[in-house]
Image (cartoon, rainbow, N blue to C red; front, side, top):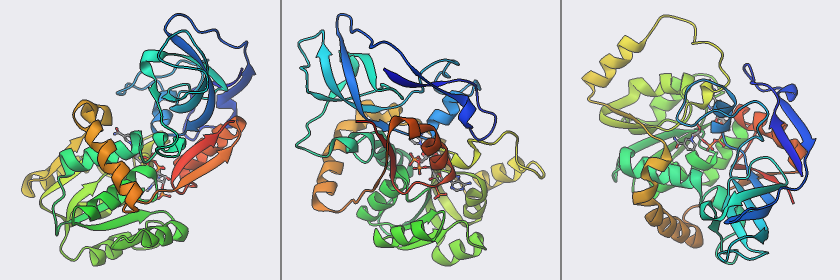
Length: 334
Ligand code: NDP
């Protein structure tokens, strides 16, 4: 079993020596477990947090652990009546060719309903994150203006398209001209490159009526540009802070938290963090039904950024954090 394990906790941007490739004997499933052959691995930003030992919402990996990650796999054998060899399942096998998992933790996929890789993207955790954050916290209404960054990624692109389906104007912010062109092709009302000069000025021009919902995926300079444009009663679902994930210290300059609290108070802002699993029990079924319909009708488009080969996972992961990806970042293993 070829695997990639955490060799050392990264300091800043992960480097090759933080990862260890090795071979292990094929694991054997116990009662209620299945042996799975990995087909697809999802590379997600939160995994960078789990490589560190800082306290977070998910326990950190230990040095030596196989790198964690969502997977779509084929059942090789199962010590359970619920699955048969050849079935395709969504699981959490991580960066390895084979995994043993509890059958109760797996979700069987119907390959005739949608491409199986979408269970890791638009029809899976990232798509649900967009849907839940927008519905439960963003509460976007017709005629309002929404802004979202990392807008070419799986969360951001779903946020922007769902907002438009709900009658809002959607401004997408992403890094580079290639991504901005992609956002225009998705039909967003404005597409801004955050790497080009004067993001605050261009964002103000794109949001003449201010911003009612800012779906926060990145933090950093984009948040600085958004904050002055937020309207009274604006909602900010705080989903991720990708600009900070490789940071090793606080940003330079004076502490601005007092000014931020002043804005929250004077504009009656709702700034609410969330982890998607909070909403899974109440909203996942609605999400699956609505999102499947939108995809079938072409009202929501999605893109996958596929790299072949398990061994390329580390470099592809680091590239995703930097913004090299367009769409959902996936490793095709087999
Ligand atoms: P993406 O595929 O969008 O990848 C992350 C993107 O972040 C990069 O592609 C890059 O896009 C952008 N980025 C990185 N650094 C910066 C920067 N300094 N300024 C602006 N943008 C930057 O990831 P996902 O769609 O999977 O996830 C999006 C966000 O949602 C992440 O923050 C993630 O942690 C969060 N998340 C939260 C969940 C929750 O339950 N709260 C669940 C799932 C995801 P670009 O080239 O456009 O800059």
